[in-house]
Length: 220
Ligand code: PRP
Image (cartoon, rainbow, N blue to C red; front, side):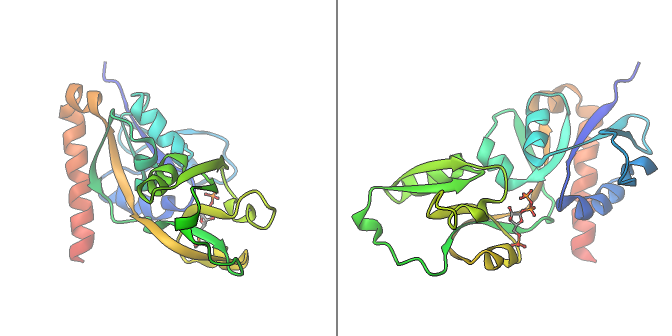
């Protein structure tokens, strides 16, 4: 009996760019996947040995790290934030480009970092935020939010936020300015390390197909 491989992909913005890449790598979800009214979370594909689950970006990393899914696509922000030793990220997919940045209200007075010892930050990325401020000799007190970080400064939750910035439109619409870029982000193919060893006959060609799909697109 062949066990199917479970491929985890994130809901949201990466999806539109990920689907053509999946197709180039030979994986196409069944029609129901594209039906916005469908409440299904797991889908068959054109390959009888591969099924797709559609979950939140942070959960892609969790499913793959625990081996519940063997392979997935997720932003490097999530890979870096979790830093799971069980995750192998062999291919930069060159999609989902954005950056992880620090932002604060446009009208906030400049703060002398040398004169303070700690900062309060609203973010979905407490690990990366603490790491960033630690390197600057500051202790970060993180208020964990799961979205709409941009609301935090105007409502007095925190002076700064650390969040993803793409076009910058969300910051602008909320009266914030980017004060520093922590790291550039792009989507990665991630694989469970144990599965990669035990099921290499299935997973190694799949990783190769993605490598090729990215290369073909770059050459186009
Ligand atoms: C992301 C991010 C920002 C926004 C930035 O949220 O958290 O809010 O996009 O994009 P921009 O610079 O182009 O305005 P997203 O819309 O993906 O939803 P989320 O809050 O559910 O993560």
